[in-house]
Amino acid sequence: MKRYLLLGCTAAMLAATPALAASDHSVTKSNNPTVAAVDDRADPALLRMHVDQLKGKDIYGSKGENMAEIEDVVRYNNQLYAVLDVDHTVDVSDKDVVLPLSKLHMKGSKLTLNMTEKELQGLEKWQKGRYESVKGKGPLSELSH
Image 1 (tube, rainbow, N blue to C red):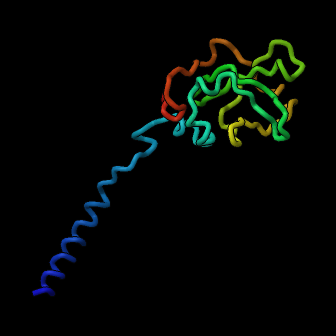
Image 2 (image 1 turned 45 degrees about the vertical axis):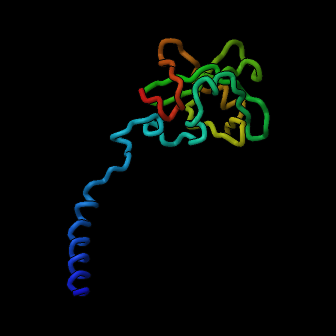
Image 3 (image 1 turned 120 degrees about the horizontal axis):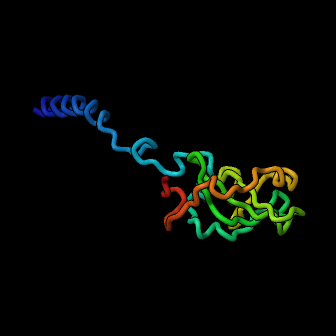
């Protein structure tokens, strides 16, 4: 009797396995679009931050030097950018530049950038009207366009 019961249970489990495998309820990029899905190279620690937490935050170079300050977070072609004020550290007059958020990394509580001042000066200049300002109160990873 135990033998038939064991065989019956095994057969039922084997029959149910393909049905369970076919019903995948996991979250994917296609059914839950997020900023992370748009730019999957961005630092996950950065994507947990809110726009308001990034505005005014200093960015440091690889040697610990203060290189810029984030003025705003914007979107262009489904990619997020930081608008950087480089005036206070670089000898450039009234020049804000845009940098893909994927270039920034969190090290502890500091935002870091692996660029030289010369490379920072060579970034695309901020152009009003070209970029959409990112608004919202949630983390960047939840702010889909």
